[in-house]
Length: 453
Figure 1: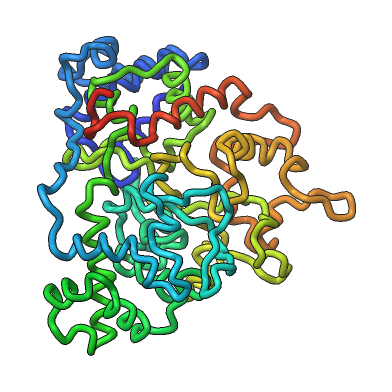
Figure 2: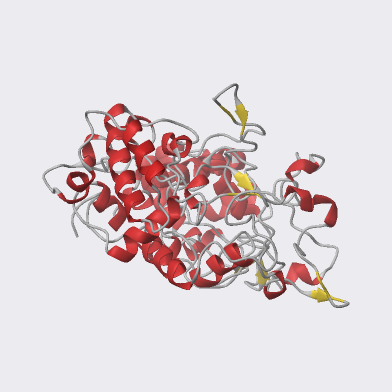
């Protein structure tokens, strides 16, 4: 396995010297554990290490050495602010919906890493709770470091800056730049909480059990100004998601291992090697597993966008109309980039933290197990007939994207760069190891960030 120094440094930031030393040490151990790791890769890892780096064995097994020197977990606030406390009330209040049955927590369940509590491809809502959404609901965990959307994110290259393409923003198409703007979307969406306008939301807030607290914080006349009341409500939701530690707990086994308080099993370690191997899983290319500036814990996303050619999902009612197509950045939910065809079909890479708790994968919820999701990734091109429909005896590859946009689909990066009939990048045993590693990203392994179980 080739040691990927560019990925080690991260797409959006570089770790500090102590962090780099520790990452190199752990990465060196991973490289030595991969069946296809060659001597040149190990030599390159050693060249890039510093005299401050502990040995791989020491970094992995000596519990007296803690990587908290280079991974800094957030300290939870002693109490929530008045805004965040109100936001918590709002988050769990189903009376804010037209149906009276749908709250933020209905689709973003705290017991399911703030993702859906079921394996439906898309969730139900609307005034009668029978309307389907059109995209799989993402988790609300680990969104705090999301940058604002940009069409072109430039990073330093060996000769000049390199364009990494669209990056940042919230929702699957990056159309808003803040948590409070994101919170506004379901409140007014006819497929979700289905409020007709700000006045309707203000009226529901005025009838809530915490209306007095809302007036106390935002003014006695706040409900006479519906637009202002709605703005304060969404800012309160943002404060709750920002301050409450349950939205960024960092209590996974991965965090415990990185803090020197646990060890990967052999299968987990092999899976971690495959995750980083640019010729195998190559997951770390987009789902960055190294710390950010100042020791920020790994977010397992680069906040970028990709077109992966996920098959059309017949579970989504909107897809029964052959003219309906979800183009991601280009719409239909996002309007401002409808004419920028080079981005059509691209969706934001989510964090992989808690991915093993999910029951629907990709933007359209097409797959419902990690096994199927990973099999698709490695067999999309080697066995397309397994994943795409046939029309008049011919496999229609990338059937959920109009032909004129299919050139946007990633066919260059492993494991998406194989030819039909070729050997997939991962075999069954390796997929099992990959799943073992991905399960280490589930929160709940420890009670505190990076702690022992």
